[in-house]
Length: 462
Ligand SMILES: *Cc1c(COP(=O)(O)O)cnc(C)c1O
Image (cartoon, rainbow, N blue to C red; front, side):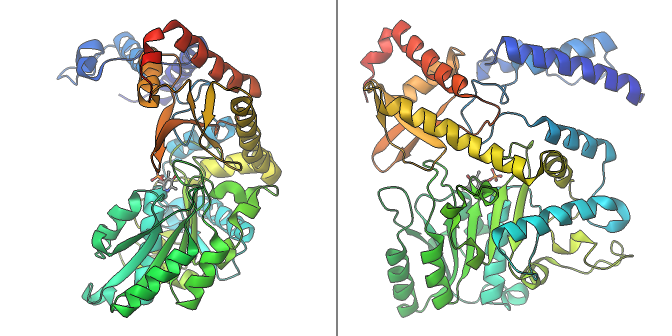
């Protein structure tokens, strides 16, 4: 039944076909969702499949799957492919460890810890810091919230919620904050959404006003979520000013850097995170700016006791050898846990910290190039700001939702749209560090050519 050598040969053939396909057709042929099951054979059947048919079926699936690594994919807060990280992830699959104990993960424990140690240093956390690899940025926010909740009301872990705990985030923050409030037992009605300024950054004075009002009404301000790189505009909340407030009122400060927290690697841009060392917890997604395969999310905690207090549990059937420092299950949400560290480590090890800095800075070079192009061309209107790799614009005043949908349906390029205040616009995310300026120019060119050939779009003015 199983023949790994033979299957790896098949794997290599499929990879070669995929890479060729990506070069030939950077945007996958789109299958109408309602026709999916009639177009490719996805059925699971009673009898085995012969090898040749198996291979053909896999090829058909690969060709039809959206291609996120090509130079025409700008739709998401990830893109491209760092091959040194891909190797690490493939090895993690073959090794198939679980990260909960040293007995089962061995050196992989040290790999994860080394990434956490180095990241803590870059953030500016002290020697009591630690962290873990949650399933993603949403889960990182959740773990941050749980630690904040338990720090404010330790009894909560035993008795459940007995007080009105209040949490704060900006209107522009990630939607996981709302879900997490409900999961954590705090409740969606106990989130205060603080208004952002004209550039999408939380307004600290309004945060403090809201905190004072909640205290007056008997609520307990518990947790502030600041965003480093908001999902639409890529804006940075003023962490330093927010930390003045959270320190004054003894509130947990979590910095959600899922999108742009990787700026800890950039000498040139880390000023955008000023004050991050004053936070209680900080998270970033290496699968976004650093280009590792999904998922690779890291949460760091200034005081590791908080992580341990909220997430450890005794389990004599599991923790039988080695100390807690090596049994990472004592500080994770999951029990069995995938090895997300190895892919980041193979990348970091091979390109060095300087290489990671270059990956991050490159994205800003590409964004600045796109900004210049937009600013120097009167057919475009710009909606985003400097120091962001989310470049937001409209072209010839065409309805951006219609244009993005048409570009996708006609397999021209894959790009999304977003909204801020009363405006909706196309959002070009220059997160693929494998792209060059030429690829950005090409994006604008294919968009302009498409509009020129599709005069109906011009009637759809926004
Ligand atoms: C992407 C993102 C998240 C969610 O991360 P996932 O890994 O997709 O769960 C959270 N916050 C921000 C600001 C993000 O950009």
